[in-house]
Length: 86
Image (cartoon, rainbow, N blue to C red; front, side):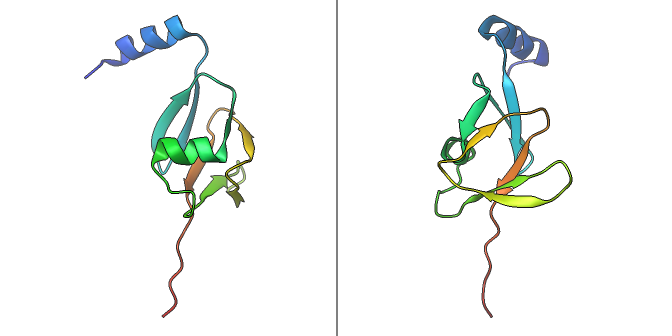
């Protein structure tokens, strides 16, 4: 397992890194924008299930697979909730 120092050194060698969170798990990419489909793929979320963006003010909105998302500090996403009738 890598130490934080080793991870930081690797990030410096690669250049700028953009991070985001999905269901409280951190992910990093080298590009400032990613699509909803890319985020779902990295997080292991099937496209049929869907993805939700949690805005800075706490509101939530669905993210279509084709939408390009600009990665800003603290960007958070979560798997779309599944509703059951019953």
